[in-house]
Length: 240
Image (spheres, one colour):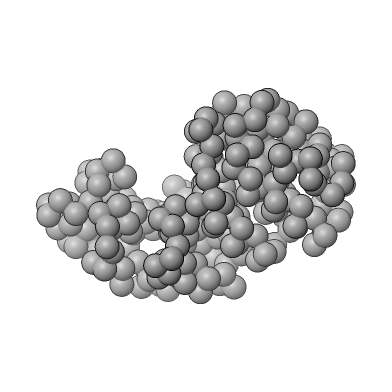
């Protein structure tokens, strides 16, 4: 397990503390600054920990939330690659929450990682799981950094009709809908009629509702949660 390889006892404690860390531990870890990024990333990207026993299975999400306070672009590639490296066999709810929060932590880095995310979308060697996470990050970026909206919308529109699989077309549609690119409404509805969207990913009714709703900030607002508010709004015990 990664926790046994972590360089310091303070990182091992992330697998022992239960669903909410102590303020003392958080301060201790964050005090290390950039030196904390590598060990925290190693833990955050080890999705097999979701198959561990309690309380160790909370460790990746603790580490992920701490990384959100350190503002390092070094987290991007390890997090994007994590789902493709192997998914846990249990802990599905924890994994789903991890996916949302990993996308948020990447998105908060803003324009500095925009081109990296676009590169992932266009790389044929990348697994679909990594691309899905990149799409999620781009959606959240439009709220964390509103100045990126037009660039993200352009990226999505350019890829709406170019995907090689129904699955990836569906995630483009999902992201366009979440972001609220209203100009794509007719094209998106046409894709549903042509059977080119997997309705297990998004239903046409939901896509219509999202595309016609002006306020996208509220549905993607979790990206703005401060550290402790994450534990208040999304307590980890909810996902087990």
